Image (cartoon, rainbow, N blue to C red; front, side, top):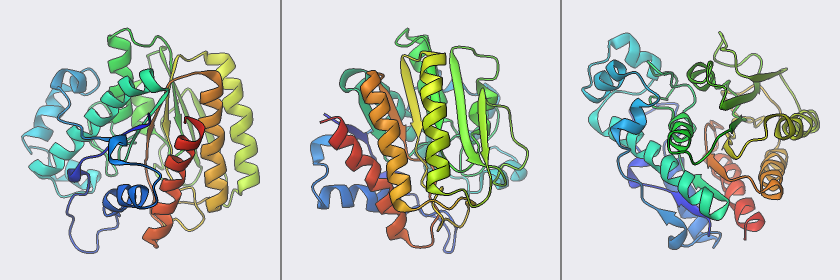
Length: 300
């Protein structure tokens, strides 16, 4: 059975006019239930990630300052959200959703998190709406508990996974692959194990051709026994923070290829949603919902 992490705190109140579309975390599960793609039995409610799982990835001083709301004004500005106890609680719950999702993925082949994909969180700081790197925490959990030996992170958000690259830069048990807009934030990129910067206006055909070639080569090269997939929908042409020109159908085909490839290879897969900033919230929800529909079809 497909298991999906969701908690009501995923939808966090923000100041009016804030550019982050927090409402998608409420609308997406409602849509999946309404259309019958999922039932209540598909969802599980994560709790607080245990501190030792977080500290296996993040610097102790940074984590304490985050929990104590003791970050500098500059550090909070880089995160982009007003700092509060509830916001930090939300981030820790998202991380637990990904950790527990790893267990469900090992059992069922796949698990998903309605939120997550917080790949701009470095070991010692947060950036761009990310404070704790959920998939990095999940990867370290698997390795430390000897549940995986070689992990591949497939980051297809339009923005480079800079925090993920920094966290695993000297760890050869995790291979970080980021395929992103060349001209997008972060403007100073980190070095992933494989970075593929895409030109502005890259279309479905170009994108899918590059992805298919490289992902198949990576499965052969890396030989992963677990994969994390960050399936951001900010690759869409309509996205106000993206630079690519993908259609909804192209984005869906991207997800179909990744999920089908992992299924065929019998490699457990954990998916976190990542970014999506199209002006029309219906487009964001539809693009994310496609990922869940495909998961149900492929892993039935």
